[in-house]
Image (cartoon, rainbow, N blue to C red; front, side, top):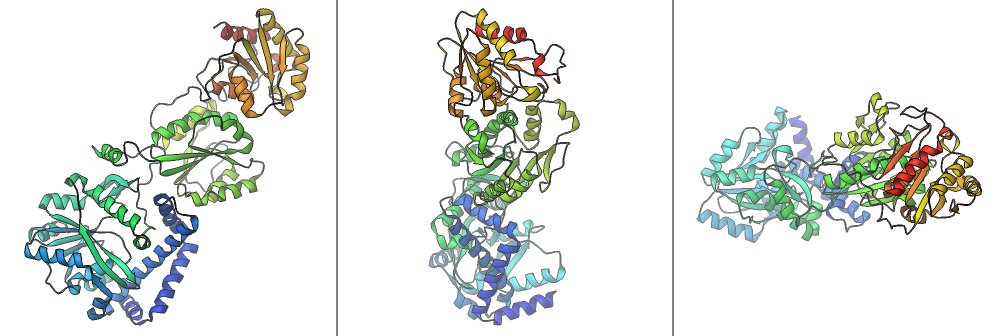
Length: 626
């Protein structure tokens, strides 16, 4: 293995630059095409950090970053076979860095060097050979290799300029000795340190940053400098840097991140140098915020101006029915509070968009083709790929929904797995057991969201616009439904006549969709002397919502308009027959009553036509009198 590395390095060192450039471009394209999931990490990072950039600009920077990372890898292999004289011509040291080095040599003190992942960062290990002055002892932290041959090659190639490599696993004690002898300790700081790091903001997103620079600086009272290699050409760079400014040791991690963020924002050349393909930001906290250590949350909020900016992106595919969607909305509302750093985008079918757009439950609502057009829906979700969603929650239970989640290209996908079928292409699932069939849909959705981190109390209060107070008693008749779920016009007529006789002044308004127009006409014919108006199939969703929201009470079977009335906060009398009112009942905590045929079990299952209109009228009159 070591022989092979040496041969490759020698070959790259002797190879014409134009050929080396071609290799870098080819490998970068290979990564983009074959290792697309890794490239999407880079594109996603750029999209989040620079939302003002177009998709073409993001791809250009991401591809150039990948190309320069390959250039760095080739430089690592080739540099041991390039003479120091030639390297000195290629790698320059900034004048400010040289002057500060001179000052440090005159007044020795321990120094910690923090280094970002830039293309030519390996050239910093050549620093003792690039300057004329004798530098203090310098130790550089590195990740050791398990392969003995590779490890031996790394040590010999990188230590040829008198830089000492310090293993991350066991060299902390040695690093302390370096500092106590007024030496320098260098380390990369912009990797994802995981749970062992401190949680702070980087480009307004939560990121774990290593605590090692702070610990060493605080323990040995060392100064901290940020040093980086700015690429000036192929295998050419200028080593730059400056002292890190921070108010206290506890603020060091935030100061390092802010320094790098400002550098990437202000220097478009360095923007292409950074390793965007790295998963820098905190991951895996789904519907809730990560656990903050003492003081971390307060610092993050202070850095972001008092509240988190909604930079992270969550996509939710809503269920295939409006009733199920209303059951999931309280969880989605709470998600916006639970993940205060995320923008929540919900996708509904086009036929539901007019209704759902009237309710405020997500930061953004998108209209997708209806589920009976699966290929069009896949095309729609594929068009969302440039949005680079961090998390995709799939509430729709179908094979097509699983395929749509792949088309959307989110880095993380979660879903509910019902007992009726297993999920495809989605590994992280909440498995609802068979007992869940006896629970309300809202409870099942809550279990799903809680499993993936949702916190806080759910709010089941109505979600519609402010209701108008009716000047007189207005009763909405919601005659939707079909087959066993529909109540006959004759039955509706009996109910209207019974209520009309019990009320001095009341206006009955009949609402329904296109299939309900014939039944609505027959209902008005049955009403006899009652004041009744027929709006079935005559109004758009916005007007229906406005008018139903202004009614005193709504009476309806298990249809979409009944659930809309409940979401609006209108007192509702829901007439259930075959449908299970426990699982598919009304969700929102507005005045409501469920009426079933008298011989019906609590789970339903009896024809709605068998309901006693006197029971329905009694419940409606209670709401009217209240």
